[in-house]
Length: 212
Image 1 (cartoon, rainbow, N blue to C red):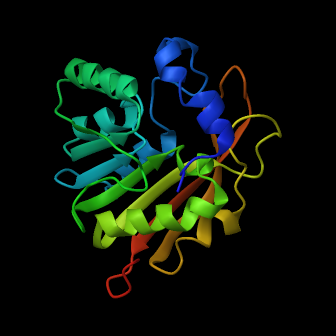
Image 2 (cartoon, rainbow, N blue to C red):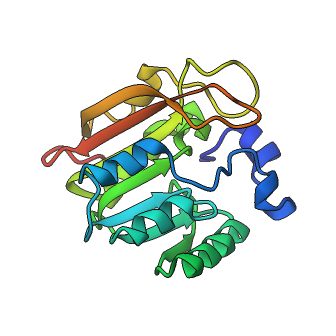
């Protein structure tokens, strides 16, 4: 099964290969404020094992590693992973970087305390969402956290990722997860999208109902 929307595959998947980071619209050079808040309040803490799905150039992965977490970044793009390796060297941190399909990451079962998704799920085609949720659940330990940030349905219409409703976010994950937090927030502005309304979702894997 193809994980991503046709638009992503045809229009965005090769951007890392064809453009410098400065010309990629979603590359802001910093993590989302809500991800930083989760580190500040201790939800994401030193010593945790984190998988950053769709890590891209490694901004979130390097940030979390810099704050004492053991981080594995997974991405399909070898060019993006090379950029992540360079950023890790600049930060003075170690990252495990794996090139893999996000629906079949090859990571061990129940090996992560946290799975982080910074702007990946909103590119997953609707028919692949259940498979994506199942892979997240497979990777996480019972009681582990899935953290997701993505476009909400309050974003202005236009090109790019899917504008997610609350049902789009919740339905694939509710069978195997409890909802710790789900809210819209205004994220950092970009030149293309000065008014950004995104979701923050924090879900805890149920101890007795693993996804299959």
